[in-house]
Image (cartoon, rainbow, N blue to C red; front, side, top):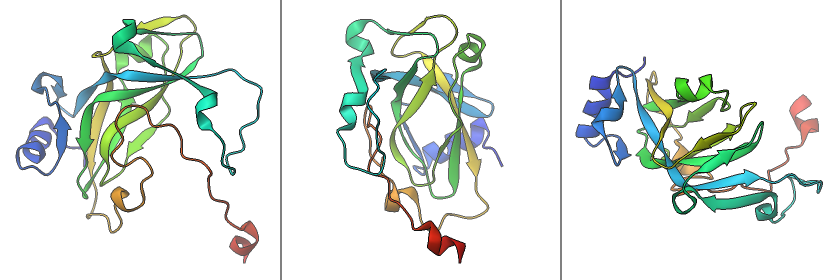
Length: 189
């Protein structure tokens, strides 16, 4: 079941969920809009192969910047950029959040992959934004994603805070590598 505006306000007022800073004007009938924060990370176009199973300096694959200091960010055609929400969220153990790009930005050709924020997550949300067929300039503070909260059939047994790599993140936290390899021979049995 998707929470309504009343349901979202009730969770926040009872201290069960956090969205800070919370601006009630960004609340809609079935979710809340979240705004762009200051940091960004552009994916660099380099030919070096990144092996996700080894320890490498992930920073060399990204170019970091600050939308607040630079007056915004122009996302080039089909470019991939990491942005984060201004808001810090804390999701309770009986909810998950679905994150969708705001319709106006999608109508400009921008795209984000399907994004789910797990029960128990706390922090700013990092979103990959993929550029349109033409350059688009974004600025910090613009509402850019719609945050839809869905109630689970029961609270989770093992929440994100137990296993989550990105718990407590502020700003852009780059991907965690190495990624573990599981023996697929054992999985076949």
